[in-house]
Image 1 (tube, helix red, strand yellow):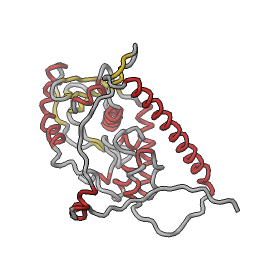
Image 2 (cartoon, rainbow, N blue to C red; image 1 turned 60 degrees about the vertical axis):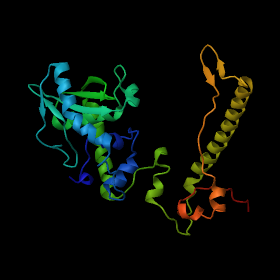
Image 3 (cartoon, rainbow, N blue to C red; image 1 turned 90 degrees about the vertical axis):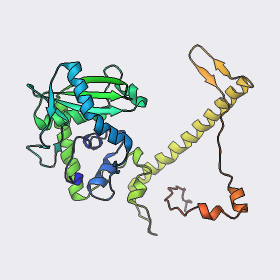
Image 4 (cartoon, rainbow, N blue to C red; image 1 turned 120 degrees about the horizontal axis):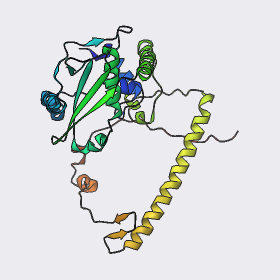
Length: 292
């Protein structure tokens, strides 16, 4: 299955700019073949998630009293053949479906109360819209110890927005026209443009953005200094004690132990070069031109 040929349920949050894992630009780079998606084969957490899918589905049956069966095929949107989805389970005797998830205990807060991660809400809505179903359930096993399931009703207005945005994104893929970069692309974008030539572009329209960047960096420097000043005062007050308590906060200043590599010792022993390798990166620098 070549994932470069369609937008699936696991892609739609990135298309919408609402994924915390992947930006529209990163997804575009995958769909256009500029980069390869992360290879998830051999990752134990992914393997366990696949192996536990049937267990979670059966647990959902016991907790909900609903019967499920495996979905027989990949579904393709009737209007746009590049929009498709796979469904974990269909719920017998209804037009409902079930999406199965497993996650680490570290992500338990994402599922507290009525909470569902945005990526998964969009994934289920995508599945509902493409399959023409009215309700989806999402069942999750958290940390191998806690089970929960929740309902997601189909939202036609939101689905139409998703379809429109997916269609616009696919035009970018076909036309080789990248989406605008976001903050999460700051390091990724070097994979798309690892090297530079010697040519400078004259782009007056970018002057306001450059000025805003410089102003933002100035404010960050001021805030960093303010943070350091406050931390120094707190440490001075704590002194030799463990920390301080207020009605709202607990502040501790504990000793932590770690290890670091002594580069100079390696150089003196003439083995430093054996354990280093050359790297290449691009650095963004801004300087103010001298007035003519």
